[in-house]
Amino acid sequence: MVVDHIIPLAAGSASDIENLCLACYRCNEFKSARLDAPDPVSGDMIPLFNPHTQAWHDHFTWSEDGLRVVGRTACGRATIEALRLNDDWLVRARRIWILVGLHPPLE
Image 1 (cartoon, rainbow, N blue to C red):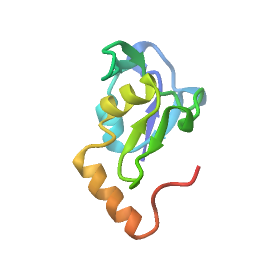
Image 2: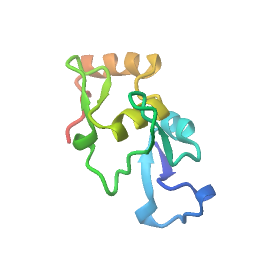
Image 3: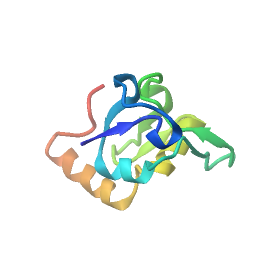
Image 4: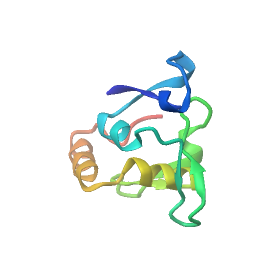
């Protein structure tokens, strides 16, 4: 895990606790300095999910097999695409985590 700036420093934010969260290295790299991303359904630019001001379960759920994150909202869908939350590497990792009882995570 790495410390992520929810609003990137490049966008004028600070390293205040209210602007920091833990993220996996890959997600942080894919996010980069983004604040928003296109919703794959509408094409509209949508702000990315903010873990300090939004509830995960409002915007995301797990697929029935637990391997993929499913977006419930435009924000969820845009975040999934921007951070590549369902790429092959993560799906393979989740399959292993399920087998050893580490996935899906508890809320």
